[in-house]
Amino acid sequence: MKSLVLSAQYLLSNTIMKYLLLLLFIPILSTAQVSGPRWYVKIGAGFGTKGFLPAELSPKSLMPSNSSFDLADGTIQDMTNSVDSLGQRSYVHDTYTKGLNYYLGAGYKLSKYWGIEMGVLWLQGGKITSHNVNDNNPLLGQGAIIDVNTYARGLAVIPSLTLDIPLNEKWLIQAHAGLTVPVYGKIYHDAVINAQHTFIGPMTGVLNAETQATFSLGINGGVGIHRKLGKRVEVFFDVIAQHMNLNGKHLKVVRYDLTIQGNAVNQLETNPGAYHSEINFVNELTAQSNNKASNANIDESKPKDDLLVTSPFSNVGFGAGIMFWLGKTE
Image (tube, rainbow, N blue to C red; front, side, top):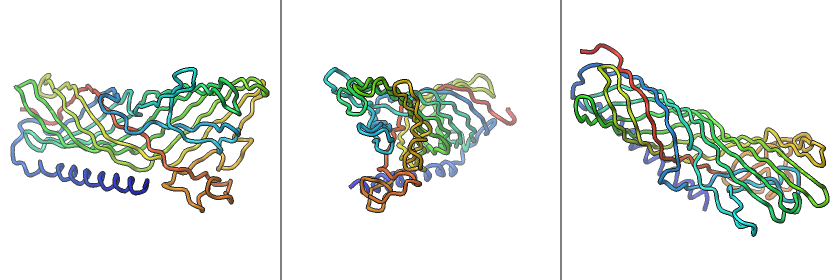
C-alpha cells in the first residue's frame, strides 16, 4: 500500500511539473514590447511559517531504544511532546522551512507583462523541538527526559514565471509560480538525555545525527507589491506559499555519548560498524534487507536498512527585497 501511495504522489508531481514547464514557454509567444531595460537582478530575505497550511507529515527523529544502549536498536519516531503527568503526548506539527531564508535571483522581461526568473534560496531553518518525559522506561528509568531539536539547512534553485500587473507609474503587482529544486542540504537532529536510573544511577547523553534527502521537486507561488524608486530600482514585498515534502535517503549518527555515574562512553566506538551508526532508507523491508527485524544475517559493516521517512517542507512565508534593472534606460 505504501509503495502505491508513493507511486501516486510521484505521478501527481510529474503531472504538475509538466504543466508548469509548459507555462514557462507560453509568454514567449507574446509580442508586446518592453520599454527600458529587460534584465534585472534582485536580492531579498524572508521568513517562513506553517501558516494556514497544516503540516501533512510530522517531523521525525531517531530515538534511543528502551532496552539497549546500541542506537541501532532505536526507532525513528514522529516527534511528540509530553503534556501531562499521565504520559499523554501531543504530536509536533511543524515545517522545516519555518525560519529565515535568503534569496538571490536574476530575471528577464519577455513582454510588458510576462517574465522569467531564476533564483537561488538559502534556508536557515528554525528549530523544531520536542520534550518527552518517560514515565516507565526500562533502560533509562522513571522520569527520564529526552529533549530533541531538529532543523534544516539547505540551498534550492527556483525557476519561475512572473506576471506583472501595473497599477500606475510607480506601483505594480507581481505574481509568480515555479518549481523548488533542492540541490544541497541536510536535516540535523540533536537529542539530550537526562535520566536517573534506579540501579545504574545518574545518566546523561548527547546524540547528533544528520539526514540527507533524495532528489525531490516542489512547487511554489506568490504575489507581491512592487514600488519603483526610479528607473533602475524597485523594492518589493511578497507573500509566498510552497508545497514540498522531502524523502530521506541516508542518515548518519555523528555523535552518541553517554555519561553514566560520571563515566563518559562513546557509543559509536563501543558499537563499531556502519550498521550501528548509519541508515539507508528503503520503501519496504524484505528478507534481504540489512535489518534485524527482517533478516537474521545482517552485515554490520553496512548501514542499516529502515523504512522511508518523509519530512514536511511546505510553508507560507513573507519576503522583502530590492531589484536592480540592468542595461540602457530611456
